[in-house]
Structures are given as structure tokens and as C-alpha cells.
Image 1 (tube, rainbow, N blue to C red):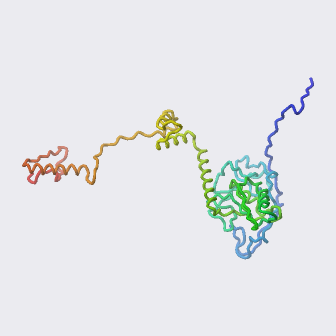
Image 2: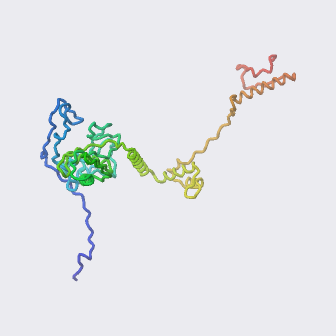
Image 3: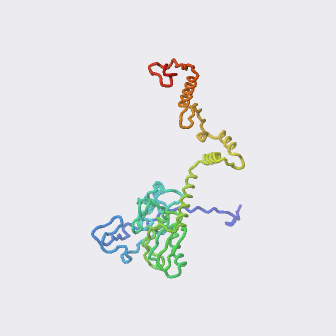
Length: 359
């Protein structure tokens, strides 16, 4: 029996595209390693240049990078995907990793949905420092979350809008961009990413690269925005992130119980029901892990002699006794006071134990 079913009558499910093994970006020894020319007598390992002499950071001494990363072509699986390493390969970001799928680090953009094991390191596992370098280069600081890059030496060939589109086209490859600001006629732009990890990756990927006019970019960390509105927005953003992170780790039942307890203290009403009644029902039906929220029974207070004013209760009783002695002396009646037998005589008697001088 022949079948006349055509391809249009059968829905063939599309295969999901699996990530391929990472390719080797360069061959071992292919990239020429150029050392900085000696312009002084001492080499500063912190700034990676010679101390003294000519300014090495000038435009004439900058050399264009020999390689550049291409995420669509170079990203793939490495050994880090099986070992659980969360850090990216620094040489992959610069486009010159010779190991490919044998690399011990990730060959892909940082995953912003998961946090790194150590917050004092960047996405390449490099240690951050307390302060930024004077030239705002290097790894950065762990005291401030910086998502903005300073892009210098841009060759402008049109309006500010055209320059912004060129910058966006080259930098959106490294992550989601929040905003771009171009300082026209100053050859400077500021690129702010949604995630700090993408900013770290883009800083290394675009260092000494070119846009459309064969320029050599100067990519640094941007200083803190002095605009008060920007400071308030950044503080609110960090507070929101912290609040969401705490809520995601909390048990919703505990959060509801704490909310009801807070409303009970304030005397509020939740969902049209008095909080006292609702709280009592919640405590009766509460699971064992919420038992610690039940208030402990208050201990019975021991009867203490109340103190009023400057004199204690014992002092007031003594004054009343002396007043009674004076009254009886005025009437000519003897005053007799019975001393408890439990009190030993060796302790002596106080002045209040005598009725008169004759006793």
C-alpha cells in the first residue's frame, strides 16, 4: 500500500541547536608577543610599564591588537563546562586562546543569572583591589560595582547619533547595553552595561581594538557619575537587587508569618480579617519549623516592695514606727516590740528595736 503523505502534511520537529566544542582561536606561537619598550630604569608590575622616562600611555606608543574575539564563531564547550569552573578565559576574550575545547576556563560570555564563587574576583578570576589605578585601568575595585566603560580615541565622522550607533554595534556583542552617552567633538563615549560581568568582558575584548575608522581605542573604567540623580538611581537599583536576592532565599511561609506578626504588633488588618484572629489560626496550624515564632509564656513576676519617690518601702515603715513611738510617749504608754526568735541575738539590735532610752 503506497503512501502519498507529503512533507507539508508532517510536522517535523526542529532539532535544538547544541553548543559545539570551542575552536582554537590561534595556533600556539602564532601571536607575536610584544613587550613594552624600555623607557625607564624600573618596571612597574602594577601599571605594566616602565617608571620614569617618556609617557608610555601616549597615542604613538599604542599598538593595535592582533586578534579579536568573535562570540558567534569562537564560543563553545570547554573542560570548564564539565568541571564546573564559573570563570571565563581571559585570552578567549582577547581572541587569542590556543587551547580551544581543551581550555580549563569558559569560552562564552559570563552567565549573569548565577553569581561567581568569590565576589572579590572579576569574571576572569583575577583579584580586585581596594582602589582603582590612577589611569582607571586594570581589574578594578571591589568597593564599587562599576558597569560603565570609558571609550576614548573615537574618530567621529558624523553626528553624535551616528557615532552612538557605531559604538552600539561594536559593543552590544559583549552583553546587553543599558545606555550609551557620546561626548561629541571630544572623541569620548561612555557605555553602561546591565551587568558588571559584561562590562568586565567588554573591557578586555575591546582594548586596543578599532571601530569603523581604524582607530585604536582606549578602554578604561569610568569614574563615578557625579550627577545626584544617577547616584540615587544606582543606590535604589542595588537595594532592589539585594532585596530580591534575600527574598529568593527565604521560605515564603516564614515571610508570610513574619509579615503577619509585624501587622499584629502594629494593630493592622490583613485581607479584611483582624490580625489577632488570623494570627491565632496560623499558630494553631503552623508547621513545626515555625514553632519558634510562637511567643513564650511570660514568667510570673515576684511581688517586690514597690518603691515610690526617693524613699524605699522599708524606710517608710521605719518612719511610721518612729511616729507611733512618739505618739505613745506623749500618752505615757510603754512601747513593746517583739523581736522574732529566728533572729540571733549576736547580730545586735538596731536603733529602731528600742522603744525608748530607758529600755
